[in-house]
Length: 111
Image (cartoon, rainbow, N blue to C red; front, side, top):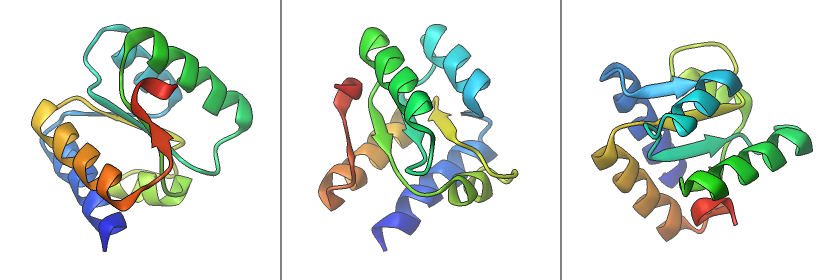
């Protein structure tokens, strides 16, 4: 149930045009201070996870590891995606609340 809520928030943000997906787009969104939440798939490579952990720690963007590539891609209406960034503050806050309540892996600011 909680998994579908998080994916729903990602889908809503996509429809609103407030999502960046894919490694390069997410990295750009974080560097330009637009990202409010970064979600990286649990099946991402360790190198990708480390890169996003470092990036999100530096820019102080909440980072969580959640779902598979296919789930993230489907929520964004695209093919498999390793990462996605929600750029809408309200939707990001709502997703973070659900993530924290359900105890899904990850941490604030990638630490």
